[in-house]
Image (cartoon, rainbow, N blue to C red; front, side, top):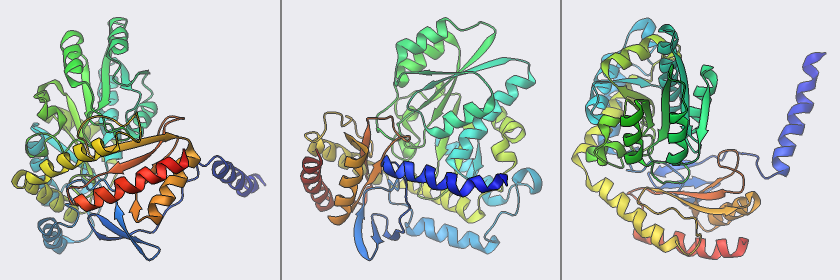
Length: 397
């Protein structure tokens, strides 16, 4: 029968992935605190988490979630069906104020927020019988690429921070076709920044819509962690921004931030919002508490970025492709998939959990160790990681 092909196909496909050193396997990692986990009975320093500000276990965040649990553990249904709960409405208002936008729409994940934003742009354009094209930086997150692909709108990819190519695409665009430029602000695998000044200049000249994913910048950059665009004084150049609450905020969820009209449109055309149950109210309350901490404890952001600068300086000898800057994402690019897996395993044996990232998450030939810093890491832990990396990287090359 037709279904009988599946077991053999699964076995073959998974075996081929393993042979190519591309098979993913999940670890059971018991969190001990914001920067330590236990795996297979061993305590490891966690340099793989995106809990940049160590807020996932902050007492204020935990208490806010616990208090909101009195209203139940689940939201019940999509907000489009049974309405938002007070915790959701309050969190959306706090997120909008934090990001400096008129409004925000809260979703269960950053992935869904990306889809909702793209679906809204495509849906509004279709409703107005307007053709729409997306122009996207080639290193933008998979959620954005997937969302645009699913929208049915044409898409052109420009080289990473390739402003000259982007300008040519805009100059040659059909005047009857609206353009949307899509980029991350801090890129999730390289930790480098978008050229926001150049994007803002092109937007002034060509009048496109700018969709900016601030997933890895929110909480880390700008006053109160408002984001990279805020830090650069370019918030007005961003039409729609995305925030992810599962990283620096230490909670769960994502948000689409923009004008009141755009957020109202998300409620009408954002299928990822319309057809998803809302996040638990306890998580909405926790996200609002995390934003409050960002506002009142700026030393967390300052320490995080200082640690990032120090570790980059120490690791510069290991890879000529270590990205400059002060983001908490620091790649050590080895290139070969098996070498990265071997290095990751040796780091675990040395007491450190570091992400071993391979294609298709990153382009072929750029497999890397992806170090993620937290303000909770100690100087001694950075020294230990640096020492281990020097030995391990030398041995796998």
